[in-house]
Length: 304
Image 1: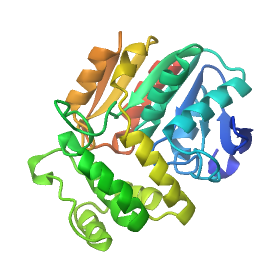
Image 2: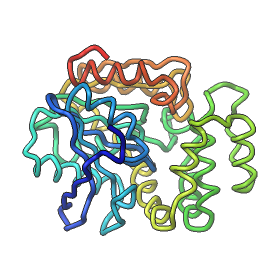
Image 3: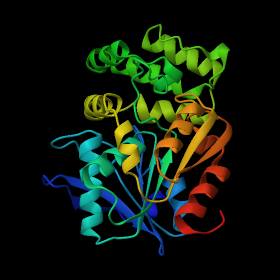
Image 4: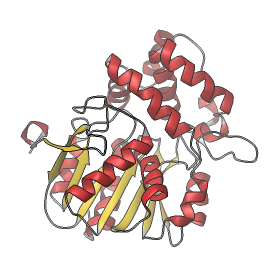
């Protein structure tokens, strides 16, 4: 099975939005909530692999992939859309898996709806608070991302989206080593060249294609996704996660640091953190066998 073989279905959000989704496989159920810029098409290899182990459901968030922009957008609305889909399909005993921004959607889901009907949660390489301020240094870019940078990013999304997205890409693609200290300087084309001079593999190319080289509608919508994701503080939500939870994280990482996962493990009752060694934030692509194996074992109770 490939993306072209998927049966694309439609459900409606609480405001009537038409949202595209796939529902493949059978057995134990996992709802996959994707990250910033990802779509059913870009995640087709992962979805294909999971449907051989159990049932996986995934939807294109508003303005992503096949779902048009409509109404309110951002992680809080994506959480409500996830709830609407679970209600439509009358699903209980579901594992929620969120990678990167998808994990932030799960934080918002738990904050809005609790954990009734969930059998478990998988959080993939994310922080509950991206802005580093005060004593909090476990957010984005290992403590580098400040509120001033957040405010500038929101302006930049409107004025020079590609430069904004390339700065994010650069922050995610290189391991947390001293020689990779964050730069954030240069024009969009200078940043693109700097990235590809250091890392011109399929992973870097796919990230740039999915997050940078996108249509105007998607780029405009990303303002709301970034505003709600990077502007939220979900630290108080962690203690409300009362179902079995694993935290997959990259070590040494890039977007976040291993200490962020340690903090989350300490705040979520009974959570277990699992490192994916030698990886950046792109661990799902850099170490797919380990990443997928951990997910299969937890969500489907089967060795990957």
